[in-house]
Image (cartoon, rainbow, N blue to C red; front, side):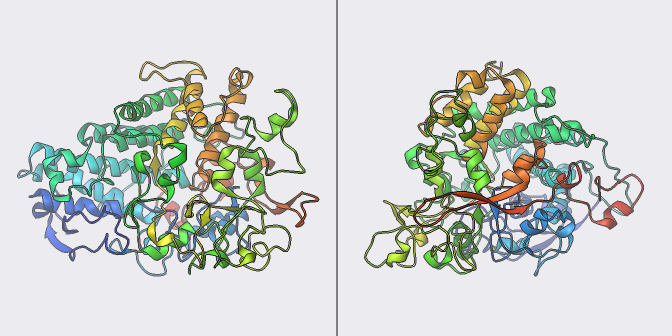
Length: 614
């Protein structure tokens, strides 16, 4: 047994309560010998607590602005931001970039005690620190002689989960990676595995172990009494099953399945892994049936994103499964307002990103449930899309999440006339200047709107609420379940683990928003139905930082449809609508599908090759 003098965070439970100023207001770190750390539950849990602070909050970990969407879904004019570097094909930016959640350089830090997420570890460092910390916990099992079996189980369950989770975070961006299951000391040899699948299966073992050891609810356990009613963000069986399924689905996806081969088929998955993913997601859906989770009602959907009972609580409602720890209120408000023009909200540190027309047009279809492309084809009836009136008859999610020209923003007497409606036309007050949206749209997914009145400098309601990008929520599980089941068995097959088809799962999500079932002729074509399923995922999870990973793992990011970021340009009178290119993204397969490793990482020994093209 190795021995370490290690630091612990005293176990007082504030790591997981979303108090914006003081959730990390903990007692000073203490240095203890390894045997002392694991001699009591409080000390051991204190050591585990720091791993929660290493879960990166993509939405607020990008310095003083919110540059966290790296796919085709948003555009910023600032080329020096991370998204600008990715658009140019410069994926090596992460090593020295101070303004990205991915890792590399820091303005200061990393500091796991900091209330500001941008000063806590980023993805690469958090992953490496977290894996080591989890391995120390697992290695120390024989020292836990004073813990009850239940206490020992939950300590180990968290460690097994985090070991898998932090490997997954690195794998999402850098690809196949050695599975580190020991505390590394001195010289070591870590050759890269030949396939992503190899590492994913090791992570699957840890998630399975975590699911066995973790409780359904901390509040029901004696060790949870010290933090009673503050345990909502802690790891549970449901969290472990959700991420187990996600790990397996990602490993089954075309990018990982084809493993950097010269060509890729976006409809071909590893069916064995997809089938395993279905069974893991099924366990979460069973918990939904038991009332542990629940899909949000459409009329209350804002509670998932920002409409909290008070400003010191996580959003998510019954859909909440897991999230990164929060941060100070200023950074959270900058995140909440990043989709709206600053002249309206007046929040410092918020920089607007423009939702792209190509993303909106390809994924927010019509009220009849068809994509715009299918609607215009005439194959499903008389078209309802009118290109001279592009904001009419759209998918209800368009109106829930997107701000279009002429939308009412506020009617109260104190709101200036020029800010009472969205003016996103060419030369409009919300389009022109450095701070305006250049795409013809804004987005309000995390933005407070009460009874049709938007938060503004003249109607300050934002301080009542807390907007957060959740790491995992129930809608995501339904969508991933449907994708995995479609890939493994087809749209209408009922798996042994749960009595819901892929078609049924997608229709459940659509029907919530008042959208008709997927057309039968689309369901009968597996590839066409996969396209539709991906549209559903894109619309439901828009602006939640899933898009870049999705278009990469589906093997489509290099196609023209996803490389061109566009705007919708139109005059004030809407007499014409023209799609114009904002930028053509540099994306070659497979080079721009994975971040390159830092050069020194690949020079340790011959068994760690660089990613292709770098």
